[in-house]
Image (tube, rainbow, N blue to C red; front, side):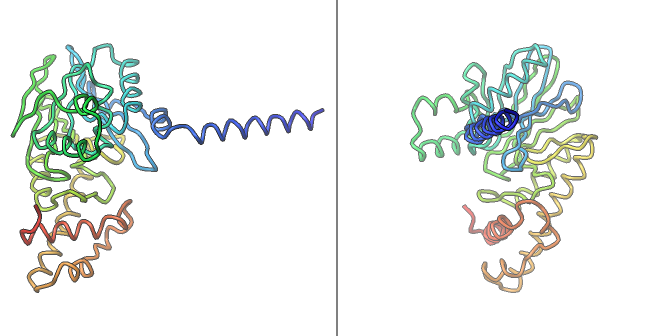
Length: 303
C-alpha cells in the first residue's frame, strides 16, 4: 500500500511539472516579476526572461503613479499593475515608453486607461514595427502614445517635476530618459545595460556615448537600467554606468584606430576583439554587431 501511494504521488508530481512547463511564456514571466523600492517614492518592477533582467520604472506621487516602460506582454504588464496596486494606493496616470521594441512596448496593451507618452521617433519606430508585423488596427491604436515630444517634456505631477528628455540616438533613434530632479534619480531603459554587453542591432554607439554624458551631467545619484541588476545601494549604479561608457569608448577608439590605418569593415571586426569584456553576458552575440554598427557610424554609412 505504501509503495502504491508513493507511486501515485510521483505520477501526480510529474503531471504537475509537465503542466507547469507548458505554461505560456508570458504567464511564467508575469509570475516571476518583483516590485522593489529603490528609494522612497521610486520602485522598479523586474522580470527574469531566460536569465536576463528587464526593468520597468515606477514613480509615485501624491496624485498618482507614472510607469516607465510596459515590458514584454499584456500579461506581464497586468502583473506589474497588480503588484503596484498591492503596495501603492494611488492610480496609474501616465505610461512613458522609451524603446519601441516589443520587450518594452507590447505591454502597452494593458494601459488603455492611461495617458501614454513617447518621443516622436519612438512613435515612428513603433508604428513601422507594427505595420510590418501586420498587427491589427486595434492593437496599433492601443499601443501608440497619446502625446509625443521633440527634445523634452515636463510634467508637474503630485508635487514633483518629472522631466522626459531626449538626448539623441542610442539604443534606438527615440530613447527617452526620465529624470526626477528633486529625488536625483534617472530612469534610462535600454540606454543603460548594467553588467551586460549592450545590444546595438539598431543602435548608434558613438552617439550613445554622448547620450550617456548628457545623462550623467543631470546630477542624478541613481541611474535605473533597462537591463541588469540594481545593487543594494542604488548609488552604485553610477559605477556600472561608467563601465558601460568605457566599453563604448574602448570600442569607438579601437575602431577609429583601424579606420585610420585604412582597414575595411571586415578587417576591423577581426581586429577589434574587446576581449576585456568577453565575460559579460551577450558578449559573444553582440561584439561583432557593435563593431559593425560603430564602424558604419564613424564612416558616415549608418542611416
